[in-house]
Length: 441
Image 1 (cartoon, one colour):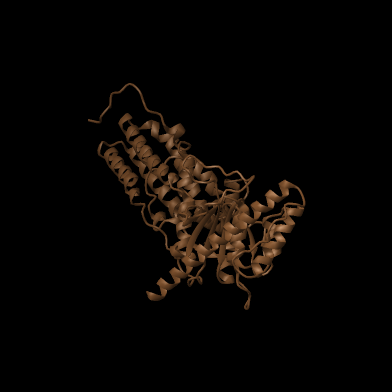
Image 2 (tube, helix red, strand yellow):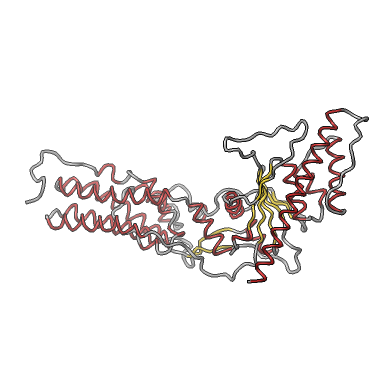
């Protein structure tokens, strides 16, 4: 006897089956290429079939598919979010290259540097007319300078991707178990619809997951100068040191999908059509099933929806950062240091000391565009100090000439520059210690 056989109502869920959970499914499917074997783990009855079909069907280029799924063709790399956000600005220390926006890879590296634990924080001397505030935890509000030593790029090959989607077995077993239960009680309508949902979802994941995730970067000319430079966005600075090709990989490289022989994406068209057929058949046949079968169908949806929510909750940017750091750039964590400062002026002088750019004046004026007489005087003296002997030795201030506020400002600026040099000494001491330890190893 079928459970709930004589119930006086039916559970008509067919009307929402193709729409419920569609956004979660799309978000989950966009992670396919970042996890190993993920494309083979979509064999479960998933909701949102019509939403997914409309979206992914637009990837197919042939005229037939454009008629079925209108709305204009979508570039697959943009669709999957490989372009992401624009990266920060870049200023080359030796090449003179200036870029107002860099690639998404630079954005990922900047985010990775933000997550670093600071190794040193400036504790400034409190000087006149320069108030400094503390946050609740006692830390000064700061801007940051991260120093990243880029190694030579590893040989091109398959990107190492994480494998931790074992939880996919949960919706798969739920769909198999519910389909078997419907078959046992001879509810063939719900049995067949669950199986159709499993097949169409699995084929859609396989079609969407085809292709090899690769990292593409522009080639560099032989004999190019060192690629050292800075990425900067607001009060966040990243000093890059390394070969030109390594720096170009950060500033102009990007993820892309290699779909050899799949320029028209016919598999995407077929899978989207199958999802539409699934939606229509579920709309017609699910109401013909028993109440118990409809509940089993709903259980598969709930299990799949929970799994899709789990995939959607994963920070895709963090996954991309992990792939970038381990498989593409191959940066040793010991070669990434983060320093924090209370003043942008101190941070800029510090990074000039670290980078020693060819055109120091140009970089200084770009990062500190102040053009008053006092600032110009201070900049001239800082540039002289950068090119001269260390440590900094600024001239004494003649308080008998000029305004009192100007004297205070110049005194503050001198103090900021001296703080920067003290931090630079700490940085060079740490770098020397690390190099010594590496030689011993």
